[in-house]
Length: 102
Image (cartoon, rainbow, N blue to C red; front, side):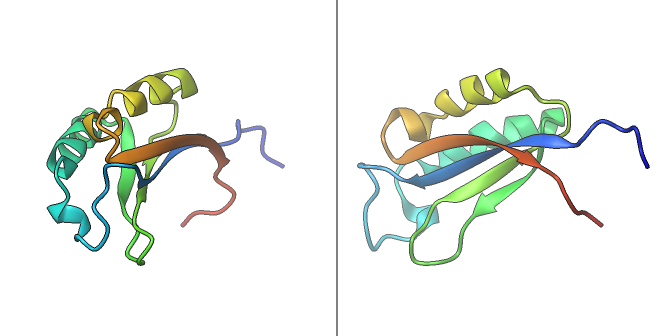
């Protein structure tokens, strides 16, 4: 049995907000480039493990933080997303236990 601390990450879940334009592809939504740029800064800093859009008709997407990034920091960063500020996207931050991985 391992004494290692559990791998708990934050998952940032995005959904279309009130400013989302139905029928328009995700990458053609006004303001989505700012959203992508916002999260690329976290990717470059090592705080983001992976992220991207859902490919079904409902839209939205998710980001999974790297190990050790605190929930308060994630919430602050997620709220600072320009696409959230303009209402293009809504955001929810949830804690996730990595139960299985390669």
